[in-house]
Length: 231
Image 1: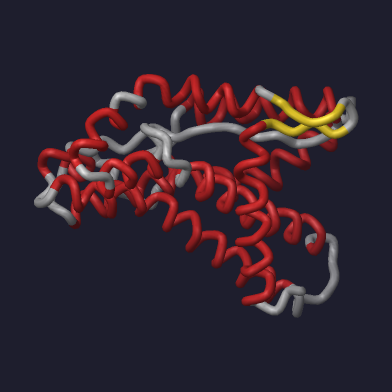
Image 2 (image 1 turned 90 degrees about the vertical axis):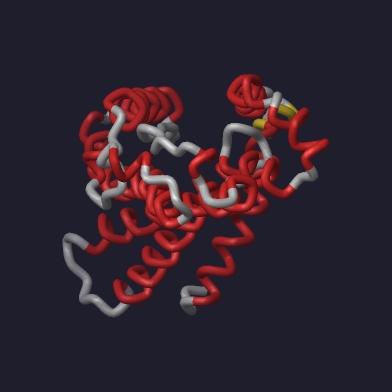
């Protein structure tokens, strides 16, 4: 059990993960205020201060436990977590069905912008002189790119209550949106099912969620690397 290695992994990953999760939530609040709902504003949740969005369990405890367990069990780093959801009253939006799409899309859009920012930083880091900080900085930047792309693609899955499910509800005709909305109570169990059901042969198994997400993540990541001339 390499405790030193675990501490180094946590110290490198903590900042990118904290901002990826919390600024995703803040973006929902900014968008909701723009379209007429001040619920998050009144609650003090429209802020770029990550501390206002931290959930002690979902943002700190659960990711730390999962990271430690995966690191010691399989010598790899797995992460899962969440921030406190920003309160949004969709009825207070000026055009609830239309504006719900933009409010839901704001979170994944924030993750895309952060991924772009980390990729730009990686490009700048290529011109820095080598030093003791070079490798940890590079690992932090790569983590920032990866975690933001994962959160973006995960949240865009068309499954209520994920952001993609909210977007789908706003786009579907009313006669289809109503039955689709009833999936929300089953959204989290379905997500867990996709995460834990593994397919493939004994030596090369992957979860259904991996099979859905990673081709999309890999494609977007490659486009980012090409955009910033990193490959």
